[in-house]
Length: 274
Image (cartoon, rainbow, N blue to C red; front, side, top):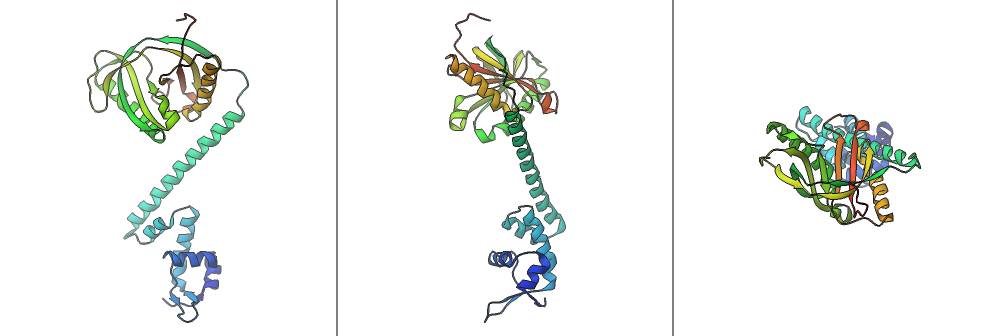
């Protein structure tokens, strides 16, 4: 390579600032073709322009410097493209998460002032196929999706009849300390044969205050807040896992707007209701 471009010229050609080029030199991402040992002046070659353009676009996509280095040093186009595709997949997942957060905030700001209907319900002990685990709160969603799929597949494979909607039990520690026990289940009649993570369980009887949550679960905290505030205001909250019943969910439709989940809060009942 012929180092015929000053750092200023190279900056103008590539739209990478002198400060950025200095940083890329220091971290070994884009080193000058030549450095004058007496003055320290850096010189670049015209052949480095395409590399600089690739770096600029990857950095515009917020790819970390270490990953950019890996792309530039990839042994072949297939390996290079795999690295780029993996980064784009992460960006799309982050974008989806951001959109969900934006939608949730809009729902919160536009939420009607009318009080949501809350009912009291006695739930009998129920035999079920279940999967249980102690989890970090950040891992629950991915675990929940996989566990429900496995449960429904096992129920079908064993020829069992579901007696109600699938559901979940979530220990208070999950919300209080970001780690605790979670159980997902499908109530069934007939004996469940343990296989994989699936085991026969009995979902205990409980007295619950119930609220219906429409739509996706990423903003279910709004319904939880309404329900928890109600039980606190009426001084009926008791210890016990929180419950969810998926009346219409991921197993029924991919359209999250059509989902409907009942959320149950354990309470002390003195009304004698059923």
